[in-house]
Image (cartoon, rainbow, N blue to C red):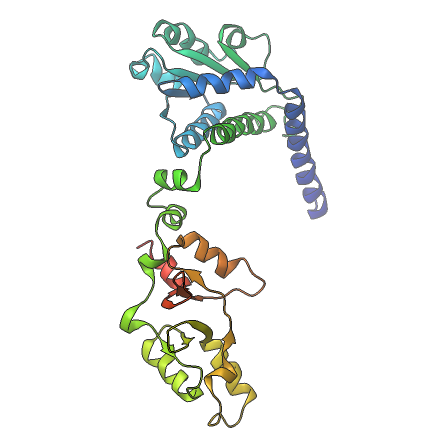
Length: 323
């Protein structure tokens, strides 16, 4: 195959998976809602599958854990060799199988029910043993796998994963899950830190805060930037109200425009009413202010509710908060 044919076939493969997802969107029924209700009422959730279904099951279990659900992945082969001991009355098992006849999976059903657990199956064959014996069945049927032999679990794996994601998303919606809830499950991830730590936790303040008045000379501003080593100086009135900002970039641009800087005042150079952040804002909010703009910035003045400048936070400080 030449390069054009490879690219064309890759797009066809993706389209097959898109078609499978479009179909499952249309055929999804109230069994999905019943499954969601069982999940929300379960003491603990056990997910199991074999092969590619097992890999998808691990992802679903991981997603459930990340939104605060008590969940564990149980390997179907190990289950009947002791691991089923984790299952108790009031638990819920989610079993994944494309065929619904995978021996290691179907053997689990009676033992799970004997231990008082409910069973949800995500299965690709409607009249299979697993579909018929589960308390709730979510049909994840596909007309065609995306692979050229119509054998390798591709479209079917994608559909099963999407159903798991849909369950997780609906759980978050029903439980009014917040960014703070998510952060509690991810305290050491950068996202978690961005949702837990506040600007005041990492900002530079006090004697380390670079400040200057509007009527000061440009040279004095450069000296303050150099001495405080934060790449900027905050321009404030006598009452420390923030009125402007000068950054390293402003200094370079000013030197390019002016041959003689002796007569320049801070007010002539500063960016008036700069982008700023409240001291109580989450790091994630500060990061968004820096990045979600046409021209990204690396530093933010920090103010209180009266617009008094009390600190500076840099992109580097947010990144370093992971250490």
